[in-house]
Image 1: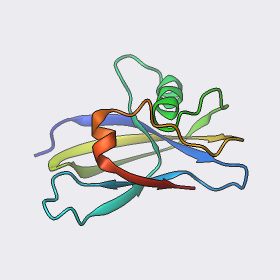
Image 2: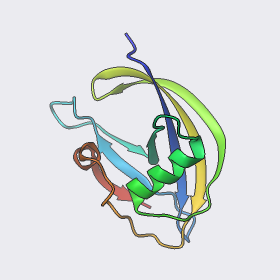
Image 3: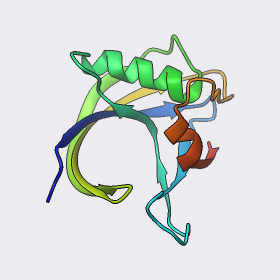
Image 4: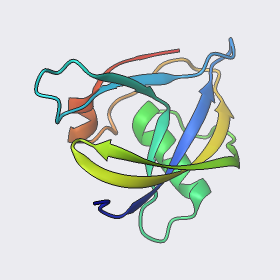
Length: 122
């Protein structure tokens, strides 16, 4: 049974060489710790946030990048997935931005992000 709908944003963040920033994550419900997946910066839209506000906040929290001009939302998709063992439906809204700084700051990460993210790559 699906436990709620999660509205989220995802950001195609491009570096000066037009590479997209991706994070590798692990599934905390996987006792063998063998499942990995790749995802773009982003996350849940909070409260009464507008999508653009959520994209800007998530980009800052997950990458340390701020002030980049976000374009979008230009695409939306919905899907069901296991969120660390809990079946959820997620609607993702996609944005894009370009940065001149390829560094990634993790100071804004939540405890869950610190547990789940194993690495990132442009």
